Length: 183
Ligand code: AMP
Image (cartoon, rainbow, N blue to C red; front, side, top):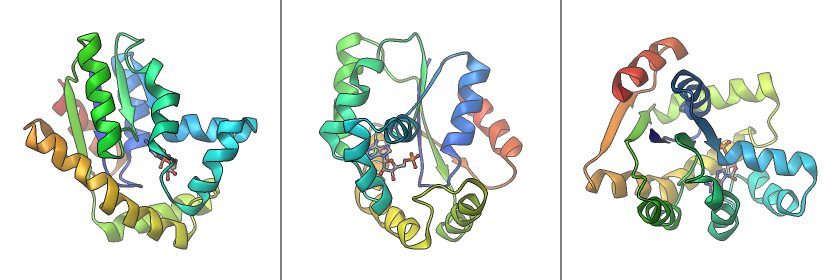
């Protein structure tokens, strides 16, 4: 099964994506996690990406697509979390999946109000100390989401295939809605 999870920063894509992949016994593919691993390892890719991430900007499409391309069709199933984030990425994903004849089975969107998202990200900042969870970067990431990633939602919506899930409530409540949408 191939599933894309869309939603703004702080909507719960990571938490729910990990749980869903475990439940379905498929790969959890999160570009944010992959990038943080590169930053931690001090690789060239990590050094390049780190500057964009710390500012709250998106890492350039060619870097992201190059990083993830070979993983898109290698496993029998996957939950894609944090990718695609631009129309260029969405089209690259379409092309890769069409070429491999492995279409998406579900496109899920978590909706959460901006107020709640900012509050969640500030809480995460104090719990996890992520370097991009400062108030300035959080606001920048919200703006970047609206400018560059919201069109991806419209792109999938015009293909008529997005399941919208209320992302508020406890993680277990949200997971219950997610499982229902996937089954
Ligand atoms: P995330 O953990 O998904 O919130 O991602 C953290 C940061 O990594 C984002 O703010 C971006 O700087 C970068 N990033 C993650 N995924 C992508 C992507 N698909 N395209 C561009 N930048 C990304």
